Length: 441
Ligand code: SF4
Image (tube, rainbow, N blue to C red; front, side):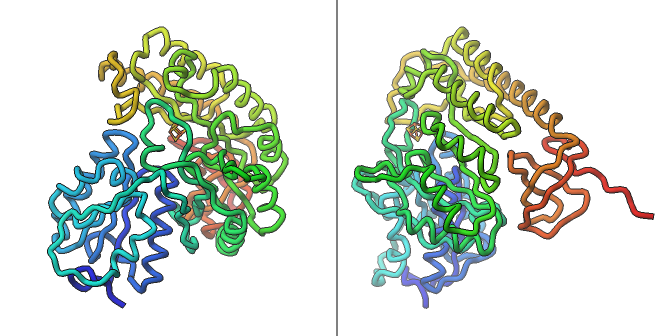
């Protein structure tokens, strides 16, 4: 079969940007296109159709996409370039104006991409045709049967929730992803069962994962779904991606602690440890709520990897507020941090705030928190030396990821995609090293 998009199109390449949910959407698109008979190309250079599946969470994410469009067009001028994802939903005209862009398809129309390619031929030499609609009308959950691992080839990333009903004042995501919606329970069970036949670890992801099942009438919560997956599938290890702090219920943390089949890894977005900043961000918890959840996680799982997203330079963030944030982070048992520098997103309330923090100050605060994170991470890694950890081996047989989210360099390479116990002998620059086995004489 061939695509009817003005010339013959046999091969495609999908390049993903941004978060796990976007990576999962990209994997779903690949599956849908393969089912239409199209071939996945090795890269953008040899593809007839290049799909850029974009992120718009910061201005530098936007810049990366524009740069990628220009590069693909320069290196493969005959390729059709289709831009989709969050940036496409937010600013379609901006993307359509870039030379080489053939179509711009928002998240509102993402599920229709394969059909758009195969609709009756129109020989008009289209450039920058836009397909974007009201994302809040989107009820559909984009999830083609996931047949392969998105992202890391040995740890498939299964998106089970999309969208967000919150309105954090800095965040553009609700406007480009729409309202919160969940993958149906039967679909999640069957996808996990199918993936478990080929992979040892499956990562459950979403835009606001803890809201899975919270639609009106929904009775089961995330913890209930996980219990069901453990009971009804053969999955060896489940890992949860980010869960908002107020969704880290005692029930969910208790379940994570009690099951050896759930990775001991908690990631809870913090954004700021200053109460005043959190209020201006319209975040729904106060620092003491957050601290309570993190301490509970540590109490129940003494070896867990515990991480957070933190933002510096939010509009109006004073030295005093930043210092409160730094001290708050210092006081909690984090093992890693993702530190973001605030970047104003058009259309969000925070972008209109009069007192934007100067760029050099944002940069300096970012550096301070990164150094703090590095020190905490080093302390955590040191505490693992001499211990035995369950790890999943990655595609390169000499690397693995531990349940508590540390990279482990294996001294004795193993087959990829296996869960094995390894004894930790020391540290690498950013991770751990397996203990050297003494040669048998
Ligand atoms: S919880 Fe807040 S930061 Fe997270 S996606 Fe929703 S609006 Fe954005």
